[in-house]
Image (tube, rainbow, N blue to C red; front, side, top):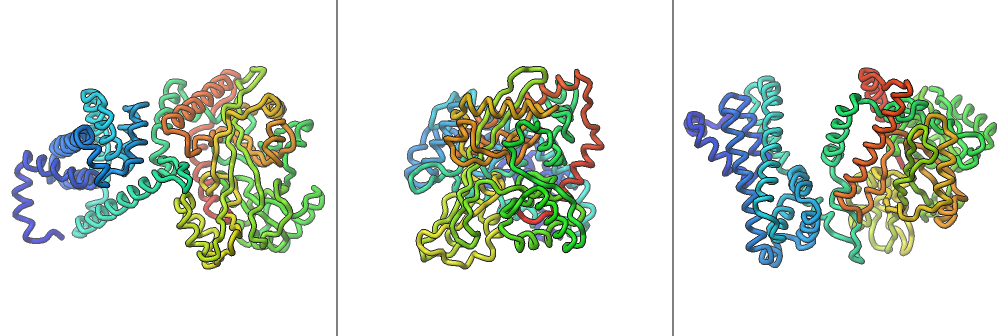
Amino acid sequence: MMLDWLQPYLSYLAEQPVLQGVVAGLATFVLEDPTTIGCGLLVAEEKMAFLTALIGVWLGIAVGDIGLYGMGRFGGAQLARRGHLRSNRARRASQWLERNLVLAVVVSRFVPGMRLPTYVGAGILRTSLSRFIAVAVAASLVWTLLLLWLTVLAGEYIMPMLGAMRWPVAGLALLALVLLQRQAVRAVEHGSEGGEDGERVVSFYEFWPPVVFYVPVALHWLWLALRFRGLLLPTVANPTVFSGGLIGESKRQIMDLVGEEQRRWVARYIVLDVHADRELALASIRREMDAAQLDFPVVAKPDVGQRGAGVWPIFRENDLVEYLERFPANCPLMLQELVGYDGRAKTDNRAPDFKEAGVMYWRHPGAELGSIPSITLKLFPVLVGDGEHTVEELIERDARARYLAGVYRDRLKAELDHVPAIGESVPLVFAGNHCQGVINKDGTAMLTTALYERIDAIAHSMPGFYFGRFDIRFDSLEKLLDGESFKIVEINGAAGEATHIWDASVSLTDAYRDLRKQIRTLFMIAVENRKRGHRPMKLLRFVRAFISYHRLARTYPKAR
């Protein structure tokens, strides 16, 4: 409920639209997004006109943007010296601005903590004032209009349901938003820092929420969907794979496509449904493993899964029993030979020397040769004990690991209080996925003719496969580049991503450029397959598959 002493002021303010706009504009100098959302709720309550809120907030934000530019142009050096602006953040923002002003300004609108260094950096660089104003004002208008409109829609639906508690709840929600934004700003500032040797360990965009990072990618997808008349056109990029490998595809289905003459490059695997009776399930697995001449150690993973979900190393039968206790019944399970393991027991407290690469591949239907536009080398991080700090403390002290502290703590919760001895290694991740904590390095420039010919031959042996990523484990980098001594552990379809973009040295501009190229190629391949008579998945069927997969994925054991 509103405080009684506020009522006269609010009543007076409700009758003064110009004053409302001025107050809203001034409030943006303190808190932009909470002010915009607060105004949207007032509009939903019919206590403020939409146009008043839009003009007031927009002009306030635009004036603030120009003010930041002026601060950089006339006092940037003093701000850095006094500690109000981190010099490394300003330097990186300035370098980004030099390459792409429009993208820098637009992205800084969405990412907490980036507006100050980006706009001040524009002033320090003496970017064209007219060009900066045009871009910044346009970006602020789009952002304000979108956020205000969405808030009004949500407010009109939710506020009546809350009744007398609507404003206390709204106040708490805005307070939570402020706290979350401040936490995000601290994360961005943290990401500006390098390791002890000065090398950047995290790109400033690497751990953005996916709903933020993939906005430009989604917009490009929608543009191509309109241009080629098919939102789900990529589901026919690989006609022999369910949904083209976009969602819900079977790992076995796509791995089984590899031709007999090329199967020596694929890690051996079996797939079977897990019986609800765990003893029967274990007995069935033993029989299948014996028949396939598959022995421990192995890798257990759901046959339908993405982003490393549910992946465990299984070193002995007891590990398998533990995994089965957590795995959903009547769900297909893949067991695969563990490639790259050196035979040490898990309890050695030393990290097994796994080596993995992600090789992106595509080929247009009918073309004689394909392309390898991306190679990502994957490093599996470890903590090294000093004899003084616990595992949990080592995570927080590590320049990179602290960004995924929640993931690592959950994964290592039984070891968090353990104090590793000096030089003792504690592996942080097993699954070779970025979201699970693996470190990606861009190895595209290392592509050799021998490796290209090997991958191209394997892809050619797969009927109806034109686009995807091969995840490969190997003995040594030299042998991999010679096209020898490696095993394919997974093949991704249309959802496969060129993961070199997560290298800390890759700029955001380059990352988006490569993703746009990837998506355009995906659509072009699908267009050609549509001409050959293949029909994209229906929207309703795709939505059902999407919902079904995500419901199932929530039941998988947490990855190790």
